[in-house]
Image (cartoon, rainbow, N blue to C red; front, side):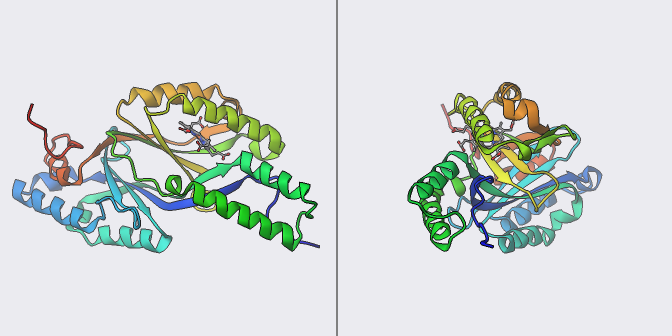
Length: 286
Ligand code: FEC
């Protein structure tokens, strides 16, 4: 029996950054007992241990002040590999600030682009060349076609984490209870629903950046969704509108939402001092 590497029922995906989200509660009482100078020192030492500068090859870490009780600080680490994510995680444990942080959530995933249209197209093209599904020729021709697709979307697999003020992260599944299961729906129907989904999404072009990461086999939900916007109302409008797209209305199940304000790493001391840290490092004179 031939082993089918490229199962026509499964949409192909291409992968980019490994992502680790971490949220922490800050131990405010202990922090308040320190002098302002000590808090500045704590912040500087912690930031020096995080790779916060934009680096298109190695990735970076961004800082988000969370609103609400689910944590005070969220870090999003984007790295090339799980080894590099591990180092980012360990690096933080070596900071003095770490003694004042209590983890409240973490989420592991890999940036993913789903390719419904392309999967169907490649299978169709190879079938038209009378290659036989599962044969070595078929599978290697498929791999070659996917390599072309991967290089085409490389910039979207390794995106810069957008420097936008508002960040919204949540995990989600695509099945509901026992009645609704995305994975039992025929390929073409799923592809049509994803087209509709992409169409709604593109209506928000420019107002939001979205990064979808896959977490099957990696964490407790199937996908992580990161949204970045200047105006937080965009999250509310976009997610509301998407509830009406069939893929969401019928199949989507959502985990907890983490929403907050991205800030410049050099402003971490402001947060520790109890002042909302800003994304810009200096206010331009008018
Ligand atoms: O089956 C799968 O592959 C599901 C992976 C997946 C999830 C998901 C959820 C959300 N998205 C949201 C926003 C946008 C915006 C755009 C957009 C487009 C796509 C495309 C694919 C895709 N999304 Fe998605 N989304 C998933 C996958 N999404 C594939 C089309 C190709 C692409 O552009 O990458 C438009 C982007 C643009 O072109 O500018 C915006 C939001 C959610 C979570 C809410 C919900 O699902 O109801 C918001 C999972």
